[in-house]
Amino acid sequence: MADIEMEAVAEIRRIAREELEFEGAVEPAHDLLRDLHLDSLGLTVLAVGLENRFRVLLSEEDAQGVRTVEDLARLVAARVQAAKPDVGVHP
Image (cartoon, rainbow, N blue to C red; front, side):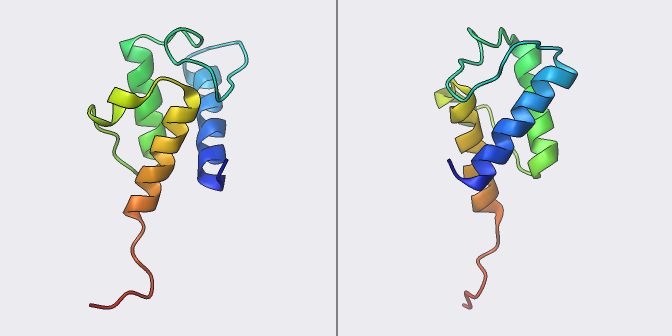
C-alpha cells in the first residue's frame, strides 16, 4: 500500500474513532456500510474529514465504486496525486 493510502487509512481510523465514535478495529478490507455501520451522515462526516485533511474534493460520482476502507483510501490517494502540479514539465 502506498504512503498516501496508508495515511488515508490512518485518517479513516481516526475519524471513525474520534468523530463517529466507532469502537472496533478499522481494517482496509472492512466494508464501510456493513462492517463500520456507517449511514449517509457517517459517510459524509468521513468524506469531509478526508477532504479537509488531504485538501481534495470527493464527488458523489467518486463514491460509486467505493465499498471498503481500502477503496476509499485508494480514491483519496488518486485525488491527491491528481491535484499535484507536474513538477519539471514546461509547455
